[in-house]
Length: 422
Image (cartoon, rainbow, N blue to C red; front, top):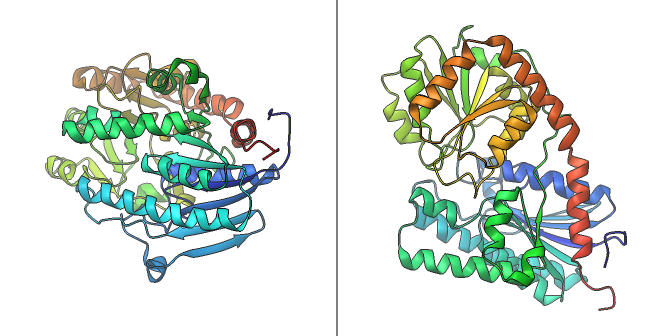
């Protein structure tokens, strides 16, 4: 079927987060679903109860943890399931078991949806990669096609950070990865780097099934605001410059660079806004730093205000991760009209994006001196920071609108949906 055929599709979407969950990938998938619905497609979402902010099901939803909760919408339905989340984010075995548990229950719930009606395509998000198997099970039940969306390449990122060291586990994960890629009608990735990574793992004849579609940013919701925000006052921060990291505080991020810079710049505020498995140890390392503030995730509606609080945002990834991960926060920072300093592998997506847009600069990963030198230079040139922020905003306005990205996903799903003759 060609993309020119606009026959409305019936799509099952399987993802680990969906609104009102605040996970960045949940924000992405929620908007993709709405764009698909706006194009006339019927979408049935299978996801979790909201759990990302505290790594446990939110109190207002906790009563439904052990039963399926389905909401019928004018464009389809949303089925929410127990995420089997553990409160200790550092317990990787517990997290893996949680992903497997959700993947199994999502397969059951998705098959129930597919049993009620004919399904044209299944759209599954990874990580966790186990949702690729979930999607395949649902698709096989109705002879539909599977499209897998890769946000981060697994297990590469976990191996690079040392989160997974067992050779047996790594070998099993790589077998699962190849199995999923070979059974998907198409695999979408966020950048050319991720596409190159995946194409090396599939047979030559299947390399054209890897499609690059960048994440979008909602430029209507995230707009530039004045730096003197209520959030700044809540943090107890005065008028001095603010350098911020906003996002998951995990072991993939080189946030020790931020603390090193804080020690060299006692007259600058440094804010870590987010939660994750590495936050406790990072807070312990920052006990002696009076100019560092830690804050929890804020409601999605406050994201523009949070981003506006900073004069400069940082995007640090450990060495080797630039080609397997594209931090979605980059586009949000740019939409807020703020510049970024990245510490990421050179000649990968984020450094190329910052150079192409003029919205920031990049240095080599894990290089404390280079990072601190670049930060000092940028903070010493406020006019340049402002110019970078304007250029960043202009770039996202012209290149990554939700509608354009939604249409790109719709085209892939149409091209790789069930043959209308079946």
